[in-house]
Image 1: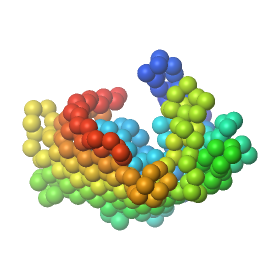
Image 2: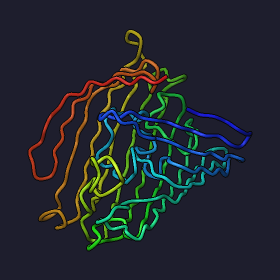
Image 3: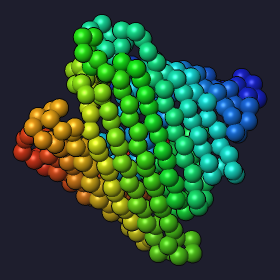
Image 4: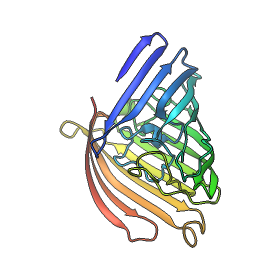
Length: 316
């Protein structure tokens, strides 16, 4: 839901019903937007982070959210705080920076001093500007534009990880890129997409407290669950130019790896990997599509598991 009270003042409110039948605030933002180059948002919002998180769950090229995107958040990558953002150089350059409530505000967890989380992101588009609102992103635009975007994000929080007895500073950064090209005039020969991201997460040499510590589930409270390690993601897709029935096929593959800090979670460098291969059946971009996906997931220290996923996405 959205409303506008003045030329420069807007609000956004998005709610989500959870599997336990409770409702939660996904976005609750007061938006002061006087200029394209400088805007101020306050409330619950997506924090400056990687492309996958700024895609949200509905603007990825794949159906399942990446396992390597592990920036903390109060809910679905969101946190409560204040941010400034803007677009410059004919919308080719975007920035966002903010201060947020942060991680591990819980008795027994590390952040008893209630230190805030600082986060920022810079992004430059070398070809067309991304046709996404504010500082949000997408991992495919299905041929609406030619994209070559590079983004750099970072976060920091004093005493952001660990327990009250053994705490450490949380630091993380990543670089990500998206290349999407229409092949031939009016994408006559299809649309090619290539995406990649590299991550570094630091916990100051300590293990974080358990995810959801003293919460009703690990999804609530922005408590625990941060891992120290290095991760990367690579994916590619091709939107076939020919119509099949009511839509078009977009085959895709994706590989992810999270490599944990040496000797902190076991001997050596334990790692978790996931491989996806499948296709989207695209009827109306991100508004209506079906996905078939084969997933091979191998968590550290256990046997690999295989799954087939069939999903549908419908937005209106």
